[in-house]
Image (cartoon, rainbow, N blue to C red; front, side):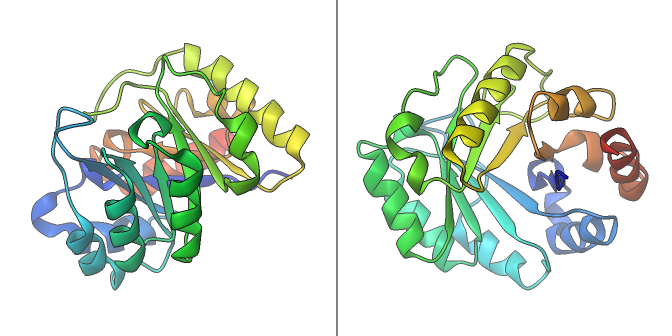
Amino acid sequence: MTTYRIAPSILSADFARLGEEVRDVIAAGADWIHFDVMDNHYVPNLTFGPMVCQALRKHSTVPIDVHLMVQPVDALASAFAKAGADLVSFHPDASQHVDRSLQLIKAEGCQAGLVFNPAQPLDVLEWVLDKVDLILIMSVNPGFGGQSFIDSALRKTERARRLIEASGRDIRLEVDGGIKVDNIRRVADAGADTFVAGSAIFGHPDYKAVIDAMRRQLA
């Protein structure tokens, strides 16, 4: 039986009270806390660095899932690992040496993931699937929260699920972008087991009500 995980993205939280927001969303049933790290270089926005992760580590009783939208990758991947991240994912086109970047993250004691933009193929997985703990399919173009779900991500999610099953490895399949109560079931049916949701959760006054509604869809 599939274990589903809901990972609220703090990109949509109230930055003025992030510690409280993290505690509240975990109390509401979050399985992971998702960090969208943007550098205003690889993507057109700027969010937070390792010090914010370090500060929030003591507020989180669940894994911290760091999604790096940065270029270059290695220095920040290492810094986030040292700051308390449990999983660190990056975009293969942002690293000159994907295999080396994955090895670096694992050497820091973190699980490592690769992230695929909407128009990006999964080809690189053929060569590094043995080093990957997480595959993250972007269902929006990275850089901003609150975007609408891109339907072609469902086909890519299906393909990623087939690759995971063929490998026989325990690899999480995460989808990020436009996830809501009314589409989370379709995303799960395509093969995803981990769901990033930002504005759908933090944009609602009752975090528990949204997370509970998502779980009912997944049941």
